[in-house]
Image (cartoon, rainbow, N blue to C red; front, side, top):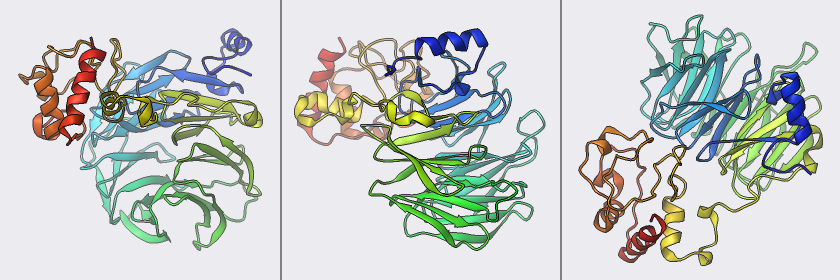
Length: 446
């Protein structure tokens, strides 16, 4: 059985000799380099390149095992989308949409959302980028022939009563479906820039959608959606009638991918399962335990449809050949520190594991993490570690990290103690818990 660490040797050699793209090789492989959980995966249909978005604030673009890193986001990156060959878009918790030129690394930042951006979709003609935000709006960004933002003003569609999670353009590009935390799927007329109708009203929030583009013989076009309460449902896009309903005791449905050429739809859930459906007869082809610990946040098919790529709580992208999924081991064979049983750790280590470890390491050289390394933290002025992109707030602060300042950081919370920094809101209200954390960090960061 292949190991998790790399390509099988023969496949790697063949890939180099033949110049094959990794996304086209029907074999198991992993992509390593991120410093936090993988939140989204995209595959270029033209080149087979793989894009990955991570909690570590970065985007990776993979032609081989060495990625091109795109660094401009100021918080976790939730979504990545290929616009055209050489052009990619990303968005995240910093409320920004960023357009990237892969040839030179230049980027455009598109501002206007007032909440985290969860999804991006590109129109079939590549002239319009749509963004879904937790501010309840959908952004429409005109693009030129080179995939850059034009001088045309962005339009924001309003109608959802809660955050928007997912988007899908119709085949002609004239309409757009959106799904929301409010439990609805809405259809928008982009010519009129207005809501046309509500297709679905669900009792729980809808996380993901996919629009079926069937062959000429298909009589019914469909839309699939996955919900917070664990339902994967297929509906007729004309009538809204339910065509198929798949409900497991696994929730929520967090990711979804569609391969029209292969006639497959895949979902990833909060219990670590990937389920693959044959969309021609709607039977379940595979139901694979892809992660022993944690959810499947990211899911995509390879360019040729032979492999399924996934990401979750680990900082690794995994790719499995679909035809023999059952022969391979799942991801997350080891338990991340923040998921370890409390009795396995001291109280100070437990506070670090639950509050800090997903963003910070205790050793040097971890620039890929969402936060800087804590190695040799005590006595260091805030905002001075080389290689990390700090906020201006920390760079200009006069804070020096010691027992008192670390205690105050968690007693008041970063939003109060250092307002304007990139640190998420974290408080530890118990004085003993804060003291135990400080004592742990004093030893662990030496």
